[in-house]
Image (cartoon, rainbow, N blue to C red; front, side, top):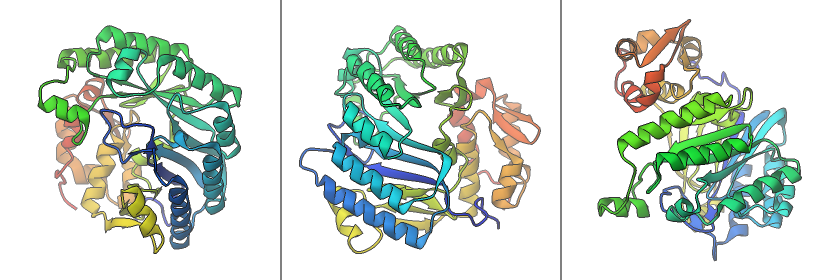
Length: 390
């Protein structure tokens, strides 16, 4: 059975910084309020994990690095400088066109910090804006306001960071279609190369989940949420942004190459508390808590679990994540990873989705139809447990 890497080491690195100034009401990510956290201890533990990781799986040329969280930009400039030097030391060989992204919150990015980020190699910043109405922002637990958004983007451009993205959300409590239209309009006025626009999901272990169960979360109706999605797709297309993935829009050539690694089911290093990595069809999950992660890193790799992905599951993953992209999934790429034909393995769900008008087929590639984009979860679900044979 061939693997997609053909023996090459991973070319993508994900690093998790789990600290936040506060916990947003919808967030179920592995993140912790910054106050009284052992930040430098964590960064030293992360340095140690990088060291042990590259000893076990030596890196080649790195094409993408993504620092997520939490809010990586809560690090102070000196902490940020230490962290970025650490990354460079353990992953020294960078592609000349490396995409080095860092998530940021408006309001946690002054010019000094952004300068340190740029000097440390960061060349793409993704700001969690979410909405352009202050009442919606406070209603979801964000600490920034709309003015912070403009100031942060101005600061980024002032230090020479121009590959910028913002996240927006729809389906928020008390959000109307008109509010989303205003947010999309204001976001487009920024003329950025990339936008991510996600629908709210009410996740367990969040304040919103508690409120939802008490029937105290005033969410938009399903009809309004569908109207929001249709509106944002048409506005982005009219402004010249390609919808290259269900929730992501970019000017040509400015797609997030790191995220495409995930959607193509390719290998990546995963570092930091609670991080997941995927190398040679083995997935690992790191210990989640900050102090347990720091403690575990003193004696070895801070793993919670490591397991091989069965070929059936890897094939299902390939279809489910690959079909999120508008380019779809190609039989050629499937054969490179698995040595088998996609049609041979998934004949039944492929034909079912084609007949339902939710998939299109052209030249060895299957992709979501316009209708399929609206019912993506139904399409992805069709490939779970649906192998014709392996």
